[in-house]
Amino acid sequence: MRRWNGWGDDSVETRLPPRALDLLETLLGPGTPLRDATLDEVVAAVPASRLAPDDRLDVDPIDRVRHARGQSLPDWIALRSGRLGAVPDAVARPADAAAVAALFVLAERTGAALLPFGGGTSVVGGVTTRPSDRPIVTVDLEATAGLRHLDETSGLATFGAGTTGPALEAALEPFGLTLGHYPQSFEASTVGGWVVTRSAGQQSRGFGRIEDLFAGGHLETPRGPFDLATYPASAAGPDLREIVLGSEGRLGILTDVTVRAGARARLERFSGYLVPDWERALLLARRLARSGLPLSMVRVSTPLETATTFALTGDSRATGLLRRYLGWRGLGPERCLVIVGLTGHPSVVGATARVVDDLVRGSNGVAGPGIGSAWQHARFAAPYLRNALWDAGYAVDTLETATDWTTLPDLAVAIGRSLRHGLESSGERVHAFSHLSHGYPSGSSLYTSYVFRLADDPDETLERWRTLKTAASRVIVEHGATISHQHGVGVDHASYLAVEKGPLGMETVETIIRTFDPDGRMARGALLGDGTT
Image 1 (cartoon, helix red, strand yellow):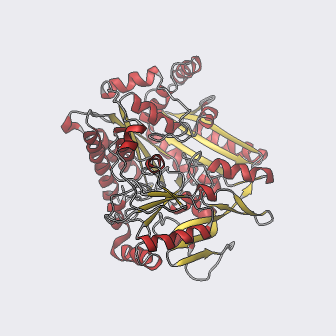
Image 2 (cartoon, one colour):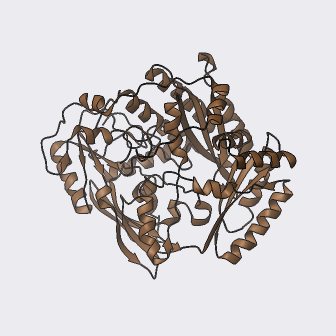
Image 3 (cartoon, one colour):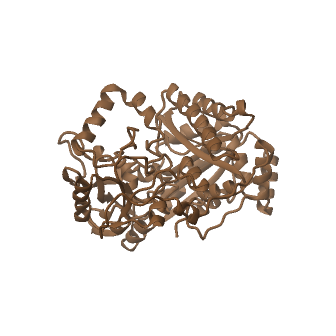
């Protein structure tokens, strides 16, 4: 079962290796584990629903609590402390577009607002219930899950929007097909959520971002159905798929998604390398991004992230041997980890691997035996570390952006500095580290994690997060980078959207929302940050 106040399946327990805990205590000071509120305590404080009984609505307090928040750090603080604030008045689980249309009728009759909920994995407040004078119905799309139609000849697969990543891939596998979209939230996030947040997967370099894979679908809106036909390409005016991509639940509820599936590769390989320093790592990343090679992934870590990654692996014999080997090869503390994914026909993978090896050697880098396969094995396990860190008395959050290669070096330094010095006035330290996860010919994404100690008072922890998030976001905006490369806008990034889109752009977004939802049947907050509903 999904953990109600943390990440992932509640049967999975993750512990910090002693080496990682020692590193955090050295960098930040000892953490103080806090007592978490119990589910019973949180449920006891849930107010009665403001909606009359209806067979389509579940008003059970436990269900409402489980749908009140997502996976942002403010969500975690609220859930762990028991200071939940608003919860939905009811949870609905429609099975298809007709049932969603009926919910819009109910919303009009009762004055309720609808809030779509896929896997509940938003890390930017995208599914968080906000205080409202109107009843809120969270619309859980799990009952829509499944493969609805497959055109094997064209490679077009239609899924219910509530289909999770593993279920989607399992449905395609018997046909020798794959979507290849693997965000870190893959195990819990849904295909509908990927579309409305403009998701990027770990291997988007090879398979494409979700906007490349989204062929069409069905959006049920307050104004009625909105169907997006599938075409291999079209010059017939603006591409209306772009209206749905990144709409974050403000236009309606996506019920069906048609994606472009491809042939499942015969071979997939992840190789790890170490290069001497960040300067050469950046140059290698840029060369790989412009190489034209059929790579499915290139991930390049800063020296700090590389050191943190090694600490998290613990003190195994293999890790010790690798450290000694790297020292013998002259790669010291400034070394940077590079992981390259190769996916395709064995002959192509082999030829490409030889070219990558040559490029790495040209950067004075070396192969790291076993690193790539270890990353592949644990690729979806990293979010579980959030649970372990919290239990040890530390909070961790992430932020991401993208910019051109010219700006990237300065931006990386500025973001790191803003976070590491962000809590100095309160005497607290921050451990911040980054990697490049998606390279493009003109630039790259930059993904940053930051860890700091929990305060005794949850409100103080929230204030620490807000201080750090604001400082880093301002740096991103000041450098002309995007406020989000892959997580979306949600509530946490909404105040920065206008800088990126401009006055006319924001007016356009607002006009589109009013066109689809003139009476405000969709819950407000995400994308525009437009106050209470």
